[in-house]
Image 1 (cartoon, rainbow, N blue to C red):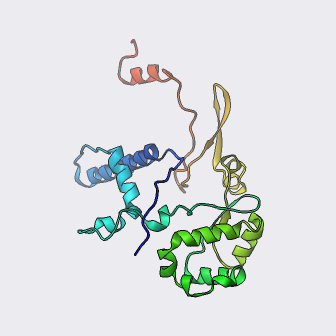
Image 2 (image 1 turned 90 degrees about the vertical axis):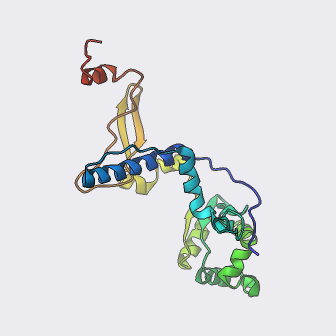
Image 3 (image 1 turned 90 degrees about the horizontal axis):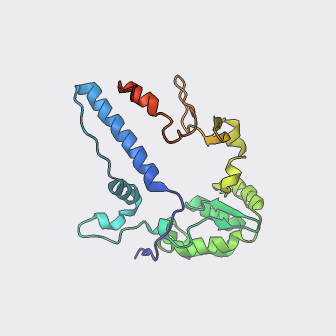
Length: 229
């Protein structure tokens, strides 16, 4: 049988506001496309609860989507308690020792004692995935992050160091591509994350900081023909 989830997990990102906003954006674009083709406008409503239910159930509907259910809702691999960045001697690492080729390469180079039948195939590992994650977690404690990165690269196993939020501001790639933009504000220069998409003809940019309370009142009233208010 497949393992069942044992506990809920907490995500520290503010997801619902952002995901619902993006959903409202592409829903609006779909309605505009419909209007462009047919000349018909329509009302668009996006529910935050429905948005997050759809967002989570993409991978977590699992066995619960069938009638009768074939299992519980939740993707076992994703909710396994030991699924998390691996602690190393000097930091943390994300690594994907996933398919049979990657597993075989890792076992041969690092843990030959794991070469038996218990973990031989992807299906066998999936059925005891939390045990696999726990064993990998114990193993990654033995070397530094850079040592692991060098070894895993040589084994063609995807891996990356876990960055702190502060480190993102100095990340060489983000700075090389000009991801951050600095704009003037009443409190001085402010550094913003820029557009994560690039357009060859209509590049976007951060126009300025968020307006203060009442900053655009006169402009809005003028647009409404009530400049004397």
